[in-house]
Image 1 (cartoon, helix red, strand yellow):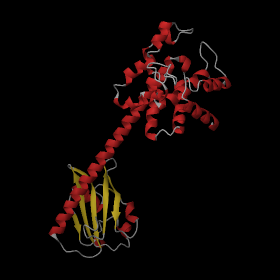
Image 2 (tube, helix red, strand yellow):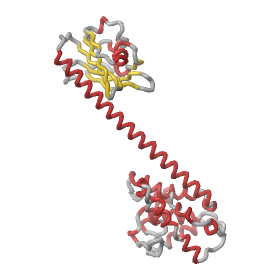
Image 3 (cartoon, rainbow, N blue to C red):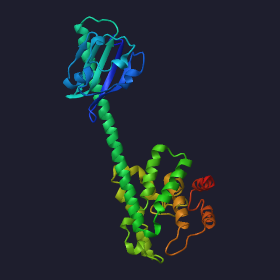
Image 4 (cartoon, rainbow, N blue to C red):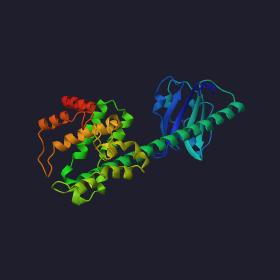
Length: 328
């Protein structure tokens, strides 16, 4: 910008609407970095006045201007001419463009018009950048709110299914660790986490009389229980941001040999995330106390998982699981 304006130095101060201050944002052509400490209240000094009144300020020699409150920041710069141009977009002050010359510059209407045009373009660019940042911030806040809601649902399900309290948190953590070992991308990990947290949300459609039954389920009761992955899909698929997370809730009861449910998927027909989750889910279930049985020893559970490699579980997922165990 300094080259475009044939100036010795330029500086952009951005307006902070919360603090009502003008703060250094960018600059070029200065001998030192002192100007970066610029921070003025709206209305303070020449720059603050220009922004407050939205008026272009021209000072032929700032060395003689007592109102230039940042003289100490410009010590040794040897500036004379100063131009302060408010940056205004959509009726709002966005900041101030400051132009400095070390030698006298005669009044030049064409140059002044160009300065005003450049300031207008800069104001629009700043406004667009701020709108984009606001949009990103709003998106981030919305995502965080969504994820807080998901974790709330997850805790509610654990509280309802009292025998599995803490289960969801543990299997989510283990599944994420397995996913990292499987080189699942960082972008996909957030969907893995959401899917793991919501893996049993379909059980909201299963009656308490079945869910909390202390003894063995009847065939009819198993048919109802086996519906929960499909119920999860039906509940979550209309929610656009959860569609990428559906693999675990929908497919975590599928088995490598095709004997699982609800669709009888086989081998790599089962999404990788669901195959990883299945190992973590069974491991945690076997090593936790349930009303109808005591927790298995880790040795017994490890032997079972090894036996089920290639049957219930993807052999690759089992290998990753044992690799993870060695790292812990």
